[in-house]
Image 1: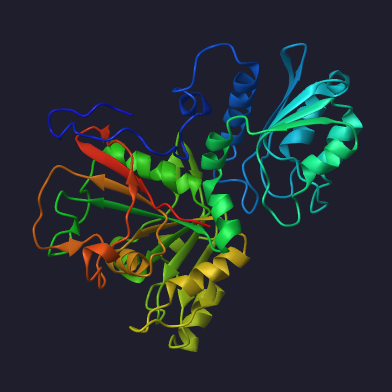
Image 2 (image 1 turned 180 degrees about the horizontal axis):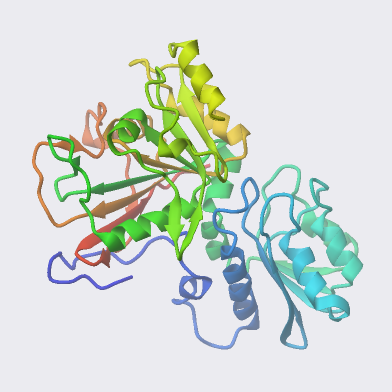
Amino acid sequence: MARLDDNWSSRGRRPQLGHFETSAASLIANRSAAVDPDVNFMSRALELARLGLGRTAPNPMVGCVIVKSGQIVGEGWHKGAGRPHAEPEALAEAGARARGARAYVTLEPCNHHGRTPPCTEALLKAGVSEVVYAVADTHALAAGGATRLQSAGVKVRAGVLETEARELNRAWFHSLAIRRPYVIAKAAMSLDGRIATATGQSKWITGALAREKGHELRRMADAIIVGAGTIVADDPALTARLDGEESHPLRVVLDSKGRCSPGAKAFDRAGKGAALATTAAAPERRLARFREHGVEPILCAPDGGGRPRLDDLLDILHRRGVVTAMIEGGGEVLGAALDADLIDEVWLFIAPLLIGGGKAAFAGAGASSLSEAPHFDFSEPEMLGPDMLVRGLRRRSF
């Protein structure tokens, strides 16, 4: 993390959580530097797994290295649903050298024939003698890989860098456990929690470095959710623009009556496309215009205010394979998510200014008492030029 400068208090807590963009090397920085081949090789497997950020849904991010005589002879990572898993990728690179070798995998090898064959069978066919994995697979269909390998005479060990591997795929484990996407709420706001002035001016509260970091978050997300007000006011593209490349997660606009223009930038059909989350109150003629533009309306149950219910939308997105959903605004949408306790992680970009009045980052009813307010574990702030990024994780038991 960057050190705090003189503009901010330096009384930050030590980081309590790993983050999507954190490298495997930094995740194990607090571990002993003594030579530990298991840690070294699993660290490399985690680095490979990270390459799948934002690409693998509904599958997890997985990395694998094949080691023989203390040397890596094959590497692989999962590049997307329907494509080869990490183990076959690494085995293909290793070739004949895989026989008698040891495989390090960030997740227990799958034992299920889905869009691709079981990784257990690929490991057995290649003749590996030992498999070391970080964390057990909790998927109801794919689990059981360790038992299958052991029954075939392969030595199996588990738990190497388990905490780091679980943290890297926390969104995937979350989606399996409670059957809805992992929700990250993002807000760019002033010190007093405002995302716009009283007249609606919001560009730009934070600076270029903070906006670039926001694009990193967009690239990690499978879907981005915003309200109709954001589309009408700002007409954002909701794409991730980094290193000269542009990626297009699924863009979902909450619009109970279909008042947005189908020609808005967010409804571009590139990449994973776009959807209009609406209710039965939306006129059919308006929905027909969206369909003509290739935008799919998603009918959700209305909340007390007639807006699409976020929990209903998240259920639908989960069934469509979305693992990580990012809520980018506006304040009413973020507030509704907070009121419903749907936020699992927050990214708060805070600018060193006071707006007063204006529009709150988290509107809605809010907690009636401090004891009812959801609590988050926050990392040490990270400075992005004059702005500060604070990330918090809502710890859940499941």
